Amino acid sequence: MSRPVLLQALPLLASLEKQLADQYEVHRLPTAGPERSAFLAARGAEFDGLVTSAAGGADAALMAALPNLRIVSSFGVGLDKIAVQEAARRGIPVGYTPDVLNDCVADLGFALLLAVARRVSEGDRYVRAGRWAAPPSSPATPPFPLGRQVSNARLGIVGLGRIGRTIARRASGFDMEVRYHSRRPVDGVDWLHEPQLLQLARWADFLVVITAGGAETRHLIDAAVLDALGPQGYLVNVSRGTVVDEAALLQALQEKRIAGAGLDVFEREPHVPEAFFGLDNVVLVPHIASSTVQTREAMGRRVMDNLRAFFAGQPLPSTAPAS
Ligand code: NAP
Ligand code: 8YV
Image 1 (tube, rainbow, N blue to C red):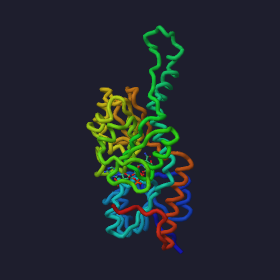
Image 2: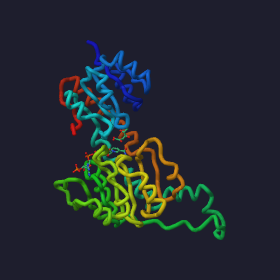
Image 3: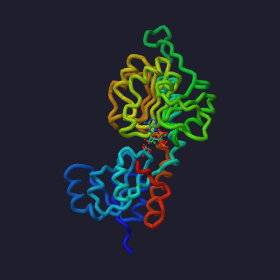
Image 4: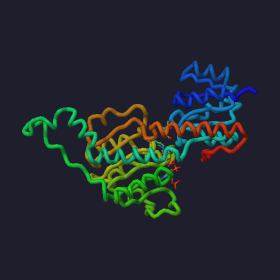
């Protein structure tokens, strides 16, 4: 029997690529430009399935070029780059990888929070530059500045979904008081729901952003929210770069209108405005919240499980909501 034919939209984890190639007929989508358009025009009708990622996505134009598409399986939980409504309109299920990455994304949220509050990256630069060992009287070596205590501080979480709740649980180990903002209160949790984001920002010492991305949350964290967080407050973003007004954040950091920020995600990845690079009050990492061997392997398994279930005529273990 012939194997289902899959289109792979972008490079994926090596072990996942191997499993895909073992079980399906897999073709790679050319990266961009005329070669890609010509490929889709000539061969778009051949594909039963599309394998992509949260970063690569699948927009309506790509789906339109695949008239016989029956399933999308995405490596990642974010749906902001996937035309889920268009898929639903065509009756195409979208598989994704929720839950298996909650722990690692929550861990990185805390890593960034601790790093910026306790000046970990700044301290690392200080030691590597030989400034710790330099003579204390030298103007090049002012004493290393004090950090901000994390234990017992107030943690505001923006978006108390699967990952937000995992972050909130981490906070109990630091004896932090937790409150959250989302459009609706979450049933069955003890943390206080704050319907006004500005109120949460005013109250919080640390504001961790972990909402969904997309048009509805674009620039939810704007200059007003940053000013409510204030000069003693820290922002951590592990959701999507689009949720934070990056220009407003940069200005707030430069003017010290907030104390600091820890950022995993950016508005125009992989491009990060160079003006961030000279600031000591920000910790920058390249969208690595789910990047551990264990979590990426688990995400790969879920991609395979979703495909396997679909081609066996069964419900997907993880079907993305259509809106
Ligand atoms: P989830 O369970 O669907 O949670 C999303 C949360 O966002 C919900 O609490 C939702 O609550 C809230 N939300 C949505 N729109 C909002 C709005 N306009 N204002 C306030 N809150 C809003 O998703 P998850 O699995 O926790 O993942 C969350 C996001 O994290 C993903 O969508 C993805 O973009 C990001 N992520 C990033 C990485 C990384 O590598 N940095 C890794 C994984 C995931 P309401 O609907 O009640 O508002
Ligand atoms: C990954 C993510 O970086 O799951 C998401 O939404 O942002 C991250 O886990 C992404 O899936 C890789 O494409």
